[in-house]
Image 1: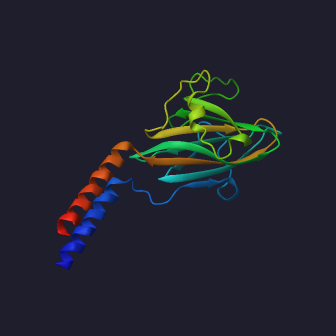
Image 2: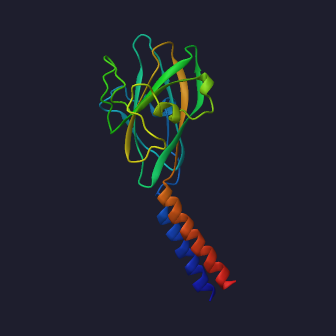
Length: 199
């Protein structure tokens, strides 16, 4: 009897694990340890986001040339990007730029910038510490616009500081899509009902 209970529990836990994305730890990119993020908009650094908080730490500056950062993120099936939190910002120039576009490259030429093909953008600054700027990006003037969270698969982010160098950490927060949450709730309810019936 005990063996049957253990088998059912293992089966239930396996079902729940199948309902969640197959990711176990958050991704991180720190330029101090992982190297400089790509400055090539057509070949950005790629990072597959995991469930939870995915941290990106970079330094951008405008001297002698603008140090642009291009990051292509992939959202695994079942995940959505719910927030981009400014975790830290250090620099004498008080604000930096972040823009986003669908796809695996950034088509906007920084030599002739236009917001028209960006999904959104925002100038984040030290005052934004601890806040979610994804909502602000969604309403960037002249951009396509979007309603957070971001679902789908591939997005490319463009970050830069045209003034004095600034070092910042942005936390990309992912959560399960609503369908995944519903399935998880159903599986949890079934497991709870089965336990009550046995008890």
